[in-house]
Length: 545
Image (cartoon, rainbow, N blue to C red; front, side):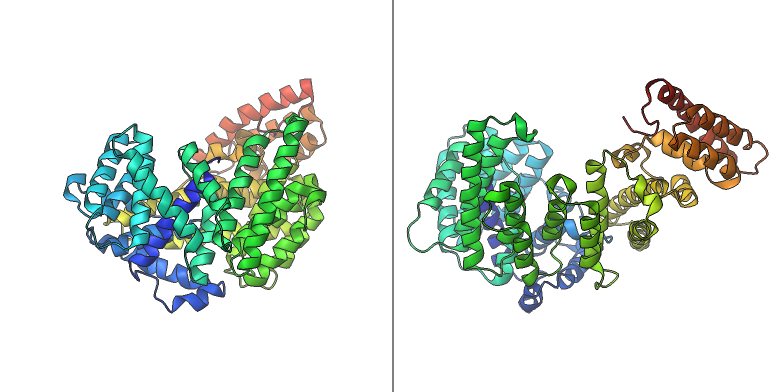
């Protein structure tokens, strides 16, 4: 995180390079729609690009880089069933020595860095530098290439050309961040991507870029203010750490607050200079929450600034929802009201409906993994379960349309399969919490693919307990199983064990498939062990840990 600024500016160069390199899948006519926040247009073109992925000529970096770029940008908007392809693999199938395009070689180096293959990454970066001189690439593209080559060489060791490459990259990045003119579409795109760009740049270089940006004369640009604020915020969190607040020494708190306030000032300036860019205001929601009474504005103020430009911006809604959690002075009722108000007028297909899943995830943390209230709130349970089922069904339909004879088709099939398994896991757990055991049973017994059984504990309960109780509280054993459930909830663990044993006995001659009978018996063994432990120590038997 300390080197966020350097990484962020490198991202600017990458994005400018990609945007400058050709129209690709983004015609110029898209900008008005993009500025209006209608990202469905972009998604539609992404779908078209993914559909043609198997026909991409490896020599055509226009299409390859555009697809890489857009799948990265819209990666968090794929929950309706559009996966991220392993596009890099199409590029790296050809040996490095056969490539002469410096931008392709830089993409190959990035791929190998991600795979931990440093010799291949170094070879691609050095070859990229060789062909960069004399190439027809524009300055922004050349800056992106040199910045990434610098990163690769820095990771790989003390190569003779490293310092020269690094110096050029720093100069180009500072120039770009202080003088570039970008369209509103590019600005919004950049502001959403910059804070989360990964990397581990040389600390001295990151500090130099920061100082040069912070001290740059003349009128500030929104991008410069945005980046300097991000750097201050990164340093503050490095001091703050991820532990509990009381573990931070008092003298360090003052430094942290000073850095946060400087970040607040810079991001506010960025918002003032270009209010159509939602990134600064979106990040100020969380920063204002951290500053509390010392913040210049409330989280709600910055949320309204974002949604005035982009009504369905997901990051801002999540950050505002988190600000309403009980730990930050809010309540479950406020969180639920916020989710309903944000989605009540939306089209059924709108991505923002996933806010309800964010709500459930936050509650798992807030309430020590206890979501039993879902059994008493039918309206909320319906909203969550219907949403998960809708996403699952669309993923199943999309998977069925894939051409598995192609590499992209096979890769996307695997991605969809994994997504469906996770969605079925969520369906089983949330239905179990809501005491809708027939629905939970269907998800638990589903095949092609089966749910991710071990993942259940992430949503609160123990997987074996959920499976056993679901199978015993539904179907022909439901009557005795539900009595056992009620006794366990009341803390009468001996009585619960008796009812569950009676339910097991009813499996004989029940007519259920042998597979289901064997699953119920196997999972019930742990259920009884947990009931005995609960009788001794009083700990609720369903808990994952």
